Image (cartoon, rainbow, N blue to C red):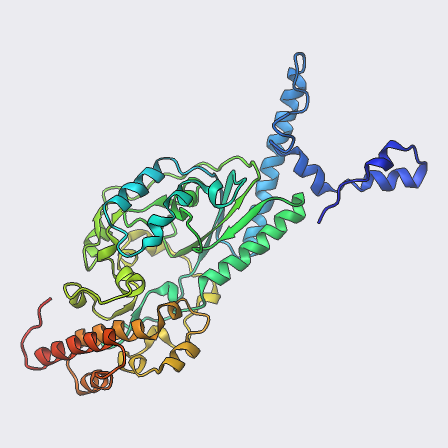
Length: 413
């Protein structure tokens, strides 16, 4: 931690080396922190009746200092593996009203925390007092590993195949905050990675990291396979300019959604979204959506897979490379995992948070949608008397669907 200079030493007229030592005790970090706007309670050097030129010089120097500091922060972010770093004012603006309207429509489903913490999302300073700037970061996660696409194999959202991004991104954000502290001295901050009520896409967009895609994800000319993270801080840094929107008249994501969850451009009804149904939903998956889920057992990437901009996506951080061959795992093999195996193999994975029961629920639906086979029916039958009523109900549905398929009749979509 940078210490303040000894004021008493300045008041005394020491000689030679003692004077030099005391002046050098003013660290570069401390001087820099003091030059940031607002560091002196809004009082600029030279403010006064006849101080226009001095004030102008201070403003110019201050802007140069801010630009240099932002570039140093960006460089530190790149060295930590962030694909982009942007700066935005901690203001939700019209996005807060859009969130309230979305909640009023009930589109959040059972995600009660969205409604409970809506005002914390709308007012960053309520979540972390003193916040005036949001530093947003992006991490690329797309991997080049082959993905199995046959219906008897599991489809898992790409972001969940490797290490838990919450821990990886938050750890790097803390290191970035430490780097900023080394640059300017102590400052007020808090780091987030999908771990608190933060309007991630809004602040990333306002910070110039991309634009708001029609699927509601952040989109860039290098695609959308990116994790986001934030540092809420009290540094009065100027915002970056937003980038232009490049979706145009394209509606590929709306048309590709299996359950038509994107009810309008920039508006998703989570209650219909496969990511919500397989991850957030605690109870039974509505029967109307089960056939549409196909072999997706954790999340859904369809709205990203069809996006033209993702043709230009860059390969991401190897931290997120698939583990346990989840990119090419057979449904019947995953369905056979015991709870102990589930917890052990998925330690450090975001998938683990849904628990073994919902894991089996999701796979049962996928098995029900798989081509009829003896191995699928045997796997389902092995869980027919599972202790969880939730699992038993989905297994019963899947067995009935398998029976229809094996009889040669087309199951209802």
